[in-house]
Length: 277
Figure (tube, rainbow, N blue to C red):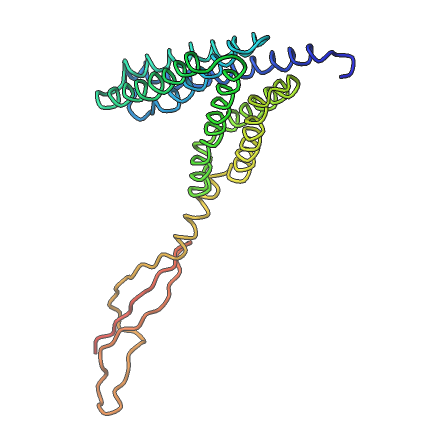
């Protein structure tokens, strides 16, 4: 890529990052279509959209402070618009308790935290220090967001199911991290580049987990067969055959029971045969 200038490469990676990120912002559309169709958001959580709104807001503010960051501004403006739309739909169809919980999140987390940071950096910090402080805040928050899938990854390992880990989303996150890493690296903007290293690593880890546990039905069937093979059902039958024990001191036989394994299909059964004499 020696025939391209540094500025051209920055533009290319930034543009590709915008395209991939728009695809990620569109990913929840089927979820909200379901919410609108059911007229209920029960079973869904608003936390991911509150976190995404906070992340987009921080990066938008950082982009506004930074020079030549039009691509950073554009994608995070789009991100804010998407997340606000999703949250409005969620609030319309959420049960009362969830609606109140979401409102508290928005007031404390988005408006409170972001508003406080905005006021402090605008009123108390000036010049280049302002960009550095906001950059560090963005980097720390981005690292926290990148680490968020750890809970999902732990759940996949525990349940041995990729139901909660869509491969396309993991691949998109990985590709998005690559694009923004090079965008930041070429600009020597490590507040953008470094968090995306972590995003790339977590994305790769998620895809590896998906490949390992991508056949949950097969695993479940094997588990069921194992459980069925170990299941023992006691069947009582009254048959006058075998398993009787002679009392050496008496002429009559003593009624006794003996256990005999009996196989039927895949299940192991224990047949209890009693003799009464």
